[in-house]
Amino acid sequence: MVRAISVGLIVLAVSVLVPSFAGAHVQVTPSVVAPNDPVLFTVLVPGELDTGTVEVDLKVPKGVFPFSYEATPGWKRKLVLSPAGLTDRIVWTGRAEPDGLVRFSFLAGTPSRDGPVFWRVIQKYGGGEEAAWIGPPGSEFPASETLVSADAPRANAGGEGREAARPSLPEDPSPGSGLTDDWIGRGLGILAILLGGTALFFIVRTGR
Picture 1 (tube, rainbow, N blue to C red):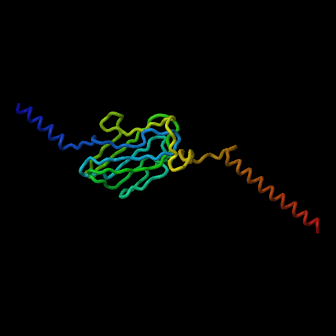
Picture 2: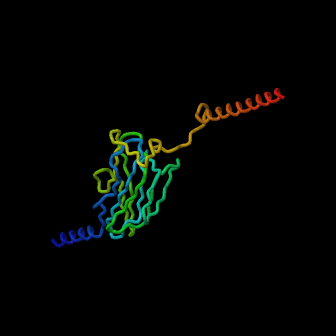
Picture 3: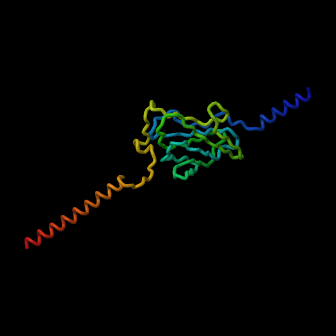
């Protein structure tokens, strides 16, 4: 009997001392977007511990291309690039009140194919605690999910048009490419100018 009471007290003490992060989740909106569309995404980060949130590390899902960011007062933003030069992670550092929340917004192009994308976030607190919102749906620490669907209305956020949904990557100027055709056009233009100048020279000389 005494042993059972002791075990119960230990369990109670552990439950009080160990912080619970699962009261409110990090959420990314909107939850449904159209493919190949510039969309305004918002990361909503609630505070759950007395030490307050001091860092939010967001892993950018594959096929999502951020290109414009809204400033958040009191917070600094750092972009971590992939070897290909694309934005791989967005890290915000600052401080939120223990019972407050913070929002981060940015424009990004959506993936070209239908299907879910998951926003994996590491939330850090002033006391050194971390909450890893990287789990599957229904888990204690789920990553926020956005569904890419051709049935969703296009947002065209920022009026950037369809082209802004994809990054501008360098292309190989191989034969037959637009770059080669451009140089051919320039060469013909220069040749025409030279021929025209030569003809004008002979006309003036003949007139004299």
